[in-house]
Amino acid sequence: MTITSKSQITLQVPAKVNPQIRVGPLRQDGYHDITLVYQAISIYDILTISHAPKGPTIRVTGMDSDRVPSDGQNLVIKAANMVAAEANIEPLVHFELVKSIPSEAGLGGGSADAAAALVGCNMLWNLNISATDLAHIGAQLGEDIPFFINGMMALGMGHKQPLVALETKGYTWNWVLGVPYRGLSTKAVFAQYDEILAQSGNAEEEYLLRRQGCIKTPWGTTDPEELLSELVNDLERPSSELLPDITAALHAGKTAGAIMSLMSGSGSTCAFLAKDEAHANSLMMVLQKLDIFRDVTMATGPVEGVKIIDSNP
Image (tube, rainbow, N blue to C red; front, side):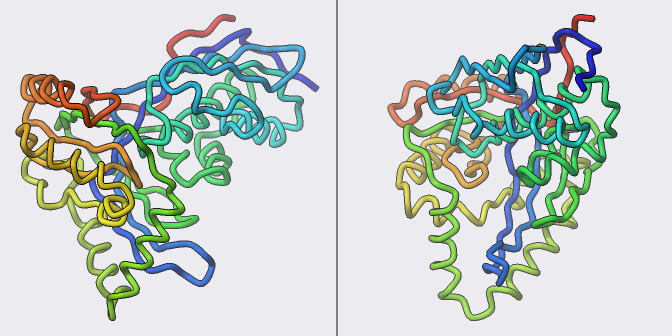
């Protein structure tokens, strides 16, 4: 059975940064305890979904499109298959994905695109799956996918734990993002982190203290300049040890005048906080002149998650 409502739908979905990431020891189930803050930022991928006689298929264009799989390994395809299975229909759709979010850079582009596919297929097929159920489907593909459905700011509380939406009160975070030429394997970063953690005698206790600090911080209701001491990423050290380019990038941001520099996700993108839009613009122009980054751009946050920008009946 195929359900038809719209003939085509176009959505935009933002990237993300992580103002704080706290990571605990490796657990027996193979996962790390992790507590982190998500913030959606104003860099967007565009996903257009249309009915097709065969599917699901995808064509990827735009930034880093050569790094993005265009087969069943793409999270967009996987998301479509999961929604179709939930509704017991055939996933006869084609995706046109235009990338602006750098790939393999710690900005969540793949997960963001999957979230757009979940929301878009739900509408295209007129399934009326609730946002809660869509988030549950997405979490089976990636723990950060549910975040991109609503965006703004949220706390991630660990493996298979639901996100906690954070209240926001109109404060704008002005970021400049620098993407180094080389990326990092998330698996390698966590392995390096485990080696570092093995040198600590009370890693679990230290993590629990850091976790509580992350949870108690008023992330969305405080001027970001008052939270500079909270902008910390536990994965920054292992990532920098694996890729010294990150150390150079963070230093460049500080030298250029960023009020805070930190790595996003497991790398290798570095996020530089600016005082306002004018400061961000001047910071961006300085960093663009350096032979450290393959891309430097401005962004603000928090912003909304998946948004429909066009639909045809």
